[in-house]
Amino acid sequence: MQSFLHRYSLILLLVILAGHESLVAATIRFLPWDHTVAARKIAFQHGEEVENLTLHPDQRSIPIKSTAGEEIFQLVALDRTSPDGKPASLAVKIPAGIQAPLVLILPDAKHPTGLRSFVIEDASANFAWGTMRFVNSTGKALLVRHDKTIKELPDTWTPVDIAPAGDARNAGVQVAARDDTKSILYSAVWRHDPNIRKLIFVVPGADVRTGVVAFKIVPEDRRVLAAPAAELPEADN
Image (cartoon, rainbow, N blue to C red; front, side, top):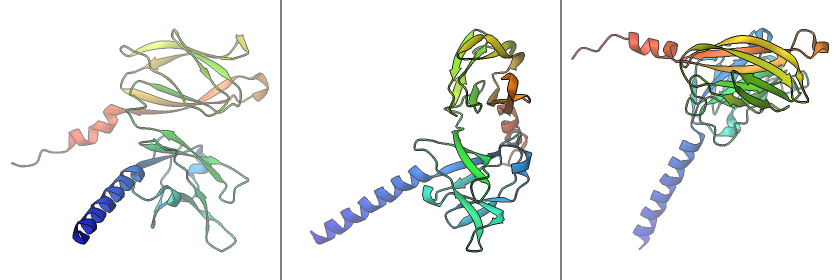
């Protein structure tokens, strides 16, 4: 009986540990808000590992694979020192259910690191190719129109997707305030390509008094991602 209980307890422990690892395992990428943030010396700590980040504001970083517990995820500002003499750090909280976190690194003068983070789901199963994922950072509720599709962009950083169907083509894009649909804040023609997904941050225009908006667009092309693997030479039989 004692031997049976011991084996049962061991099996239960292994099941719990396996389940825990599957919950916290993640492939994480990073995106700095602008060139100023990208130029900073920033590392990512996951568990006992600390890895320096190479950042560019127009593209995602290389992926980092981690199975550390969420409470161990931190951005480390190597150019800022905390009162204990160590580099200042910022905890990165990844919301439950996110499969492939993209950590947006933003400036924050109030934090010792000078940074804050915002995590976006970046898994292609959730953020499909050909999709435009809008994040409204203006603080004002907006409406965006792409071709015949109209979506509301809340005044929070909640992502909103527009997924046009069909082949590559040009389509009209307009943005207006939710409470004043007659005043067009932005109007242009964008190129839709089913092979390219776009992460689009709506930001205030250069002259904030006019209310006009601008965009920070980070595209990703699945053909580019597939190219390195396709170019590898075939192994000898």
